[in-house]
Length: 137
Image (cartoon, rainbow, N blue to C red):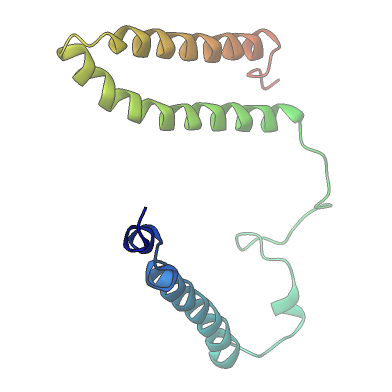
């Protein structure tokens, strides 16, 4: 290997990282500038009314630390699982029709993988349903 080939294979770190550094600098300047501007321009009055809890125009009643039913959190987690599931459907939905149209052997693997994925999620959903997570009584 010659020296010229070695020099061509060595990347130029400052040139490659310049856009990343510039974007990071802009992000830091924007966030710092926004915080400084809000402190400088923002309201400075305080008082009992300004420091009280605001609850949609109503006076808060009771303790803010009361317990919620665990089912609420379980339903929220199930929603997140199905929300993330949708994210995995998009790449599959773009690849599968192309591979199926060209009779690609990987189309069968793609279909089988998605069927297994949906079956696992269906089992989790049926388990939560059997446990009574969706009953609000």
